[in-house]
Amino acid sequence: AEEKKKKEYNFREFSTCEATIQMLQKAAADGVETAFQRAAEMKACPIGADSACCKHCAMGPCRLNPKDPYSKVGVCGATIDTIAARNFSRMVAAGCAAHTDHGMTMLDVFREVVNGRIADYKIKDEEKLRSVAASIGIEVEGRETMEIAKDLYEELERTYTQVEGEIPFAKRVPEKTLETWRKHGIVPRGAMREIMEIMHRSHMGVDQDYENIVKQCSRTALADGWGGSMVATEISDILFGTPKPHVAGVNMGFLREDHVNIIVHGHEPNLFESMIDSVNDPDLIAKAKEAGAAGINLLGMCCSGAEVLSRHGVPHAGNFMSTEVVIATGAADAMAVDVQCIKQALVQMSECYGTKFFTTNPRAKIEGAQHVEFHEHEPRKCTNKVVEMAIERFRNRPGRVVIPQRRDMGVHGFSHEYINYMLGGTFRGSYTPLNDNIINGRIRGVAGVVGCTNPRVKQDWYHVELVKELIKNNVLVVQTGCSQIALAKAGLMKPDAAVLAGDGLAEVCETVGMPPVLGCGSCVDNSRILIACAEMVRVGGLGDKISDLPVAGAAPEYMSEKALCIGQYFVASGVYTVFGVTFPSLEGTKFHKLMFEGLEEMGFGKWGFATDPYEMARMMIDHIDKKREALGIMG
Ligand code: SF4
Ligand code: MSK
Image (tube, rainbow, N blue to C red; front, side):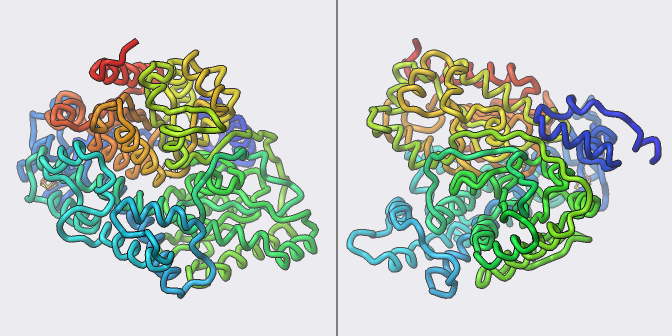
C-alpha cells in the first residue's frame, strides 16, 4: 500500500481538463487517490469486457473463450450469442429503470402539484403543458390549465403502467418509423412491463434466441427514450420552465473562496430547484454573512448540473470525472447528491477535506454519508439543512483552499422547442430552417455527441476531438450530459467557435448567432434530440422516417448502463450510434453482427465502435453522406 501511494502518475495522460489535472496533482500531494488511479491499478477483466461470461445461475458462473467464442458453451448450453444478448439486455434494462424511475419521480411531483398537495412547486410553463398535452391528443382548446394537467397526468402514467397497447408518446414518432416498430413487435408498453419482461426473458433457461432477446431489448430501450426519459424532460419543463438559450459558465473557477460553496450532484431536478430557493433565502444568506462569508454560491455537477445550467444558467463545476477532485479544492463546503453516477468514493474524499457530504434520496444511501432525506412535500427542510451545515463548515473551514482559475462561458439551453423553431421558423429575424440548410449542403448533417467521461480514457479529449472534427466537416452537433460540459470547457459553446466550423456551418452559425455545438441538458434530455429528429422528418425534404435522416450519434467516453440504453433507443429509432472505450460483444459473433449490421437491414439504425475520435468522426460522416446520397441531396 505504501508503494501504491508513492507511485507517480502523469496526470496529463488522465485528462485534458486543466482544472481536473491541477486538482489531481493537489490530491496526490495530499496523499488522496481518485478513480483515475484506481482505474490505472485495476485492469478490466478481458472476459467480462467482451461479455463472454454469465452468472445468471448457480451452475456457473460460466466463462467462454473470447479468442474462440464458439469452442465452448455454458453449463446449460448457452452460446456466446445468448450470453452476450442477455448481458446486454440486462444492462439496457438497468439503464431504462434508472431513467424511467427518474421520470416517475417527476410525475409523482406533478401529480401532487395537480392535486394541490404540494405548495413548493407549481406549473411554471403553461404553454409547454398545453403543447405536450396536445401532442398526445388531449383536448386543450378552451380548457382550464388544471383540467388539462389532470388529463396529462393520467395519460402519462401509462408510460409506466400500461400493460398492453402503445405508450402515449408513440404518437410523436414519425409514422413510417412507427410502422417498422409495429412490424417487429417492439412498440413499447409501459416501462414496468417491458423491464419485467426482459428480466424474465434473460433469466436462466428462458429466451435463448439472441435475435428474439434483442427485440425485447429494443422495446425496453424505447420505453426509456420515448417513455420515461421523455416524461422526465417534459414534466421538468412544465414544472420548472423550458430552457431557452442564455450565456452561462462552466468550470471549477466558479467556486468562490469567500462564499459558502454548495454543490448539487446527481440527476433529479426537484432537489436542485429547492436548493436554488434555499440559497436565495434572506435568513440563510444572513446566517452565511454572520459566519464571515460574502454570500452563498451554488454550483451543479454531472446531469443535475447540466439540467439547471440549461434551464437557469446555474454555473457547472465539472463532469463525472471531476466530481472527486472538486472536493480537493477544499472550497466545497457541502455536496448534496440524489441518484445516479455518484461514486461511493466521494464519502471518503469528503472526509479527507472536511466537506459535508449528504445523501438525500431514500433510494440512494451511501455507507458513511450523512443522510438528510428529501421529501417533495416539504423540500426546503432538506435543502435548508444542507445550507446550514455548509455554513458551519465554512465557519470552520479546515485546510488550504486552492481553486483552479478556469471559467468558461458559453451559450446553453437549447430545448427541442428552440431547435424546432430554428428548423422551420425564424431566429433573431433570420429565416433559418435547418432542413433547408441540410438540403442545400451548408449543413452536412446533425450529430448527437453525448454521454459520460470514463477513467479508462483521457477525460474530455475524445469528446472534444470528435466534435471539432465533426463541425470542421459541417456537421452541426447537439449535446447532453457530461459530454456537453467537456465541450463547454473547451469553449465550443460560444458563437465565435464557428471559426472552427467548415464554411457552410460557420455561415449558418454566423447568420443565426448560434454556436456550432448546441447544449440540450442532461441525459434524460436526449429525448429532446429524439423529438428534434421526429420534427426534421415532419418538416420534410429529408425522407419519411428517422433512419432516412443524415444524422448520427456518439458516446465516445461512456461508462454507464444508462448510456447503453440511450444508444439502443437511438439505434432502434433509426440512428447510427458509435460508442468508444469498449463494447460488450465480440466481433465475429452472430450477436455482434446483428447489432452492427443486421438491425440496419431490418429498418433500424445500427451500432458502431471506435476508440479513435477521428475514426469515429469519419464513420459518422460516411454514414451521413450515405444518407444524403440516398435522399439525392449530395453536393
Ligand atoms: Fe452458466 Fe447457463 Fe447458468 Fe449462465 S445460465 S451461469 S451460462 S449455466
Ligand atoms: S451524469 S450517465 S456520467 S453523462 Fe448523467 Fe454524466 Fe454519464 Fe452520468
